[in-house]
Amino acid sequence: MNYYERYCGDYQRDTAHLSLAEHGAYTMLLDTYFSVEKPLPKELPGLYRVCRAMTRVEQQAVKAVAEQFFPVSEIDGLRHNARADREIAKARPKIEAARINGRKGGRPLKEKEAEKENGYGIPQKPTGLSGAFENRGAEITPEAARREPAGKALQHQHQRQRQHQCQFHEDREDAHIHICAADKELSACDPLPASESIAPTRHENGSAITVPPGTAGACCKSMTRHGVQACNPHHPTLLALLQAGAVEEEFVQAARSAAAKGKANFAYVIGTVKRQREEAAKLILHKGRMPNRQELLEASNKAATEGWLPPELRGSASEEQQLGEIHHANR
Image 1: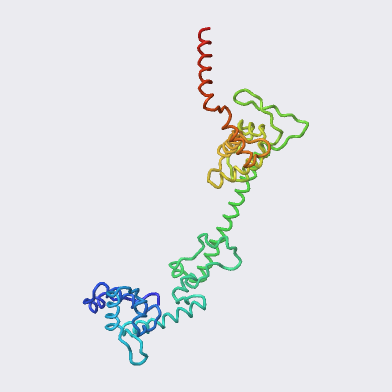
Image 2: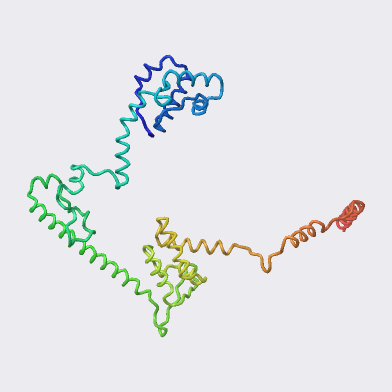
């Protein structure tokens, strides 16, 4: 048993004379008794180990509690507690029933619970309808089921579901119209024929920015597919990034990251690509082969020894430097 009822009034009445150590020993012995659902051994050393009694005072407390509340039975030679035996016998049928229900997949539903799950005998999901409409307000409440006969209630339920089905198709048509309108707006960004020329776009500072035809439109389409709103293929920052060598994949990755953060807007995505490229431009990378550890050590020693002079020459060098400065000042 992982749980047993402890009646505080009965416990206080029967254990009012115990010391603090004896209360702890009694609690440890009771917990062991209920957890194993068996009587305790007769030998005191085993009880000492169960209660973690190390000192003489603790062992004396265990011995006093065991002799008073867990007497040795003449039948099996083990220590029994009459109250614990009654509680275990009372709980065993419930424990066994729980084990059987667990093997069968859970406790069987009561009659009222089964009626509640089935909608008071009225099916909530008639055959022939898809699961997309099962939770769209088509259920029959218990009050309606009691007010109307079963046939009328089912008829009203089918009518509500047909209404929701029609509404669902209308919503899909509206969404399709909006998508087509968005595609039509972006179609202006498609690549132009090679025979047509594109006038260079002017930046704010007046410099001309030339971008291959259709590149900005393709980037905007890719960002729109990833949830970015209000894409502008003529935005000067977008055109400047494309002229600097930015590719469509950079904008797609930035759009995915922005959507994951809940910031799927055009300005944020463009700013992300711009910041990444500015940070990459600031990097100063070592050119050529990376030196090994020995070469780094030699270079460090060489840098430390450059300009070194022995002690006897340091004073003369400083005097010559001072004389040179004086002579230069006199000129």
